[in-house]
Image 1 (cartoon, rainbow, N blue to C red):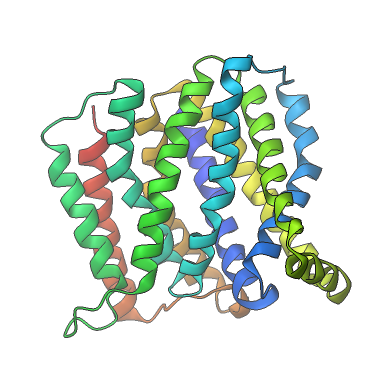
Image 2 (cartoon, rainbow, N blue to C red; image 1 turned 90 degrees about the vertical axis):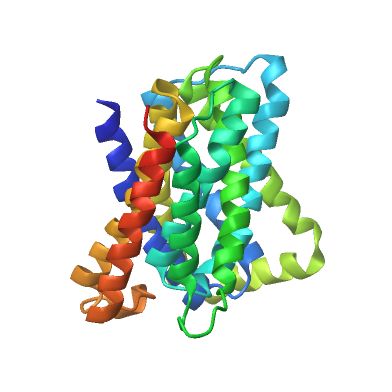
Length: 296
């Protein structure tokens, strides 16, 4: 049952990643403003969660963890959007697999989940494939900046996932999800303290209604993905719950191949035959590495 929910999460997140690329490269000049607008719109969808699983006040001992998760869910967006400005969406999404390197380590120290010797081979395959994906020219071993941005993103999200699981061990998924979103909104609203961001917020608000329609669609997709991902995380161990994300790049590449000719402005994706073959091979190696890391 959980695997179908996790698959649904990946389908939502995959389309959300496509729209993220369009938003950060075409509609919003400031990542700060994009992040704040995103969390504002996220609040509109939050009541839907209330009808699915009514939240309660979390135990006081969990509040520091919820605040920490909310902060991490804001912070990771900055290197993530920077990575989307540097590379193809499917390549960036594949680099989320770096999280499978950090996740077992955090899970071991915080949740007591034990590492296995064969995981190290999986780590090596993930790092090797991720590095090759970001190389623009195999004759010159120069990694794209997206590699390093996503290394930071994966580190943050791995810690985020383990802390999320820690809270879910003591609170319902509805309670956890809603309070995390509220805390994330609080931290994103702190951006408005800066005068330049306040001014940019007002200008963006007046400049284009079109951007809000796309942002609302992106946040709806993100909402669907995050609700399904949180519910999955409440059912199974954290390493297993996050393993399904390894199919992200295949989903995004599929979206690009099928839809890019109809909606070219939405995609930042090289889909010539040679590039597609290269991506499929390296995505498959990443998938094999993830399998070694997370298999029981």
